[in-house]
Image 1 (tube, helix red, strand yellow):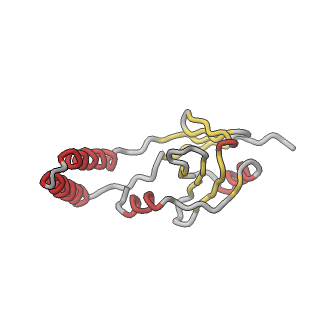
Image 2 (cartoon, one colour; image 1 turned 45 degrees about the vertical axis):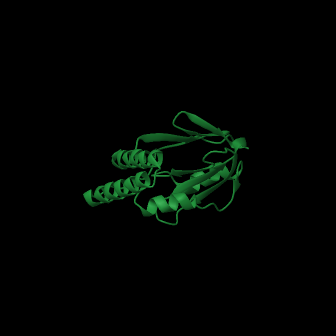
Image 3 (cartoon, helix red, strand yellow; image 1 turned 120 degrees about the vertical axis):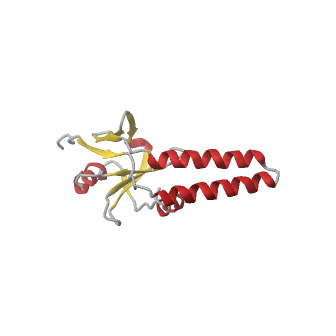
Amino acid sequence: MEPQQTIRWETPEYIWKPKTIDWFWALGIIAIATSVTAMLMGNVLFGVFILIAAGMLGYFSIRQPEIVEVEIDARNIRIKETKYPFRDIEAFWIDNEKGDNQLLILTKRFFMPLMAIPLADADHDVVREALINNIEERELVDTPAHKVLEGFGL
């Protein structure tokens, strides 16, 4: 068997969608109203938490995604500087349902076990062939939380 070739591509770290000024107004109104309600109910800490969370949500919604390099070699998937050995990956799936191909990877990590990597200009058939002999191919779907965030344009 010949050695596997290394596959590399560059992709944004996430799919960025521009927000309108109305989106920011809605975020601010909802955050302030919820925060004031929490404070009136005697939960000042939760009210402050809502304001901080809304501020961070606003910041991350205007932040442009960084372009990262993804590499698949004979034993690892590397995203930026982090390597994910095949032994730590339970399954993969190439999701091309919405037109923007994504490589979904289910890892053995406790925190954020499902990762979605945009394939950008990478050939999804070549990526599948590189992974199929080392990792189980299983249909994976985005988490409900991720779908809710996509619904809000995040």
